[in-house]
Length: 320
View 1 (tube, rainbow, N blue to C red):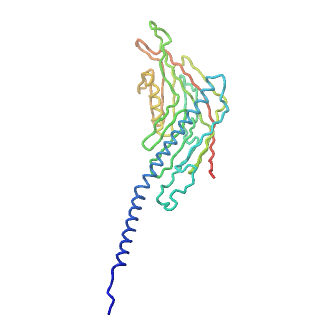
View 2: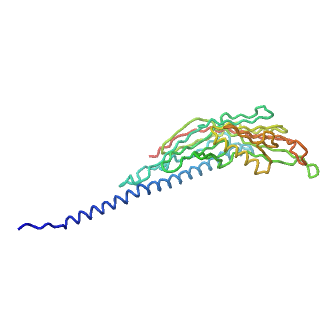
View 3: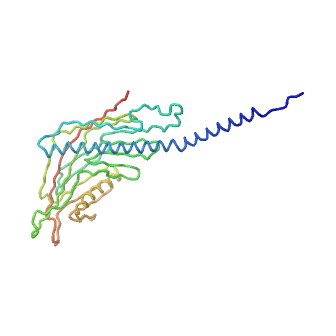
């Protein structure tokens, strides 16, 4: 008598296949949506960390040249060391996701460099060159993100800049001040325009990249000094930037320096007391006495320049 067919084993196989399919679908959805989201969060947190490190770096460098100028002691020759994580893994071992490594975000990297942008800074007095930084120099971090937008932070002439595809902005402004003072009295006002600039130059030329840790050693060179030009006449502050986005950021730096102290400015070549112009990658800020019959004209322009040079070297730190 033939044995009748039974479906008990078949139903168990179908159930197992359905359960396996459900697991595969869940893992696929996580890999498509969850992994990029986690990677994006890691890279955003890392870029915020880079920004904070650059803020600390700027404050530390400012303290060196300010101490050397304004106190009896000098910080010349002192070297500061700062550590920057090049990627989201930093100095850690890339062992996340031991059982399912494909479910862990790919670690990002980055490139740290010194003097990657050939930007120049010049100050002219009545058409005669008095200060020239060629190049100004910079200390920069360029991201190699896998899930977040690419960003480049760089320290240049005492300021912190952020460069993205959409443009460049000064997160912390360079030390540029333009303001008006009255050296007379209420009955006989005599206004002068004060232009104060910290001309800070970065010297060096290195580049390292990867996913480890970069050590940045910065030494304040000897020769920190201050120059004052009284009744200078026409002062032209000029920046030759590496691209138009950087030039636009420097133009905004000059505008902010003028507007925060309420000094009048314009874009007409004859504007007084301050004219701010941009021509492609070159930016001008022209400061000069006012003319005409105004009741309180600016009669003279004074320039105060602080000079400081830093030597920057890079080393990649390997974590055992």
